[in-house]
Image (cartoon, rainbow, N blue to C red):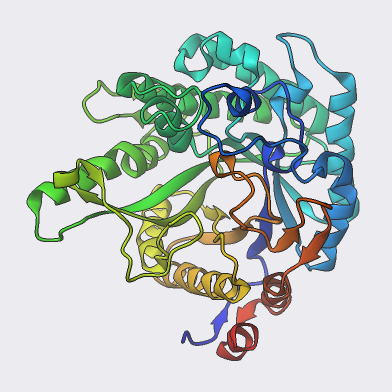
Amino acid sequence: MHPTIQFPLDFVFGSAAAAHQVEGNNVHNDWWAHEHAPNTNAVEVSGSACDHYHRFAEDFRLLKSLGQPAHRLSIEWSRIEPAEGQIQKAEVEHYRQVLTTLRELEIEPWVTLHHFTSPVWFIQKGGFARAENVPLFRRFVERVAREYGDLAQRWCTINEPTAVAELGYRFGYFPPRLTVPEVAADVLTNFFRAHAAAADALREYARRTPSVGITLAVQQHEPYRPDSTADQALAAQRDAETNGVSFAALGTGVFSYPGRAPVKIAGLEASSSFVGIQYYSRVRYDVESGGPAFPDSSRQLSQMAWEIYPEGFPPLLERAAATGLPVYVTENGICCDDDRQRVQYIADHLAAVDQARGAGANVRGYFYWSSMDNFEWNFGYKPKFGLIAVDQQTLARTPRPSAHFFAEVIRDRKITPELVAAYTR
């Protein structure tokens, strides 16, 4: 059991969601097309999701009642620009209402500009696989900055660039389901170009002085057999291709993917006000099986068979802090049926945050993933990440006990053994 953990008054707490996963009927993006493709590997379609598009005010009032002072959300590019150059004024106004509602409730919006989804027309032009398309994304960001720069100050440009690049272009799991490592490396490079371009646009057009970051999916990469030099080498390679290249790019402004010539990206070194870290688990590598090993069955697993591995979190937070940027945990969470497990997960990972802070890492906030149960990409609606349960038949929202536990942590700025015990007994 952890000792009492205290967080400073300016430590940011909140929870997160993403447009495609909660809004419903985002019919003009690549994920909608992927879900409906004849050969899709998605287990179900997103459909109306949580109908957050129509129920956002109700949902934000619920978050307010649960004591959450900040909320991370995304703006769906394909709603605002469903066809190239065709701006939907009603959708522009919709997101103004969304952000205004958060402001009226005194919930600080943290706005993500690209959370996995792109307009179909953009993908048809090659998407982020082509550097010449980055200005199209910048144009969208310029519009968002002009429209909402008076309402939002915290901006996350690209969500989990390594996840999109690798799962979509290297391992064929996400759209467009390619298995071309060279293209995946191009996409990752261009995401960092897009981040720098977006940061520049926000600073030029937003009326509130913007705080800008990119949110990185990080994992602890470890050898399956600790004494195997081959497994160690593979784990080190995978770390370099994901965590390492991303941290180095933010720290130096140079994108240096293993095996490729370094690329100096204009504006990248000065682009970020912070770095967002999104951590869920570890991956162990087994050369004999050709890649990731099966999860350790002796450990607790989530509904998506991810190991619960909080001890892998502090070293990654410390590496993120070594970039010289302030660090915010912009996602961390568990999908499970037993809500007591969720409470313990939050407590253990906030203890890991405290450990990293104690080691000198400048970690300034924590967003739980996710605010409510939602569409978990190819896994569909089965994984339950939410602090708030959503009944997929009625769409009724019901805060879980973990939501009230989190509310007490936020209110008191601390976690005590007694508080954890009260919610896990």
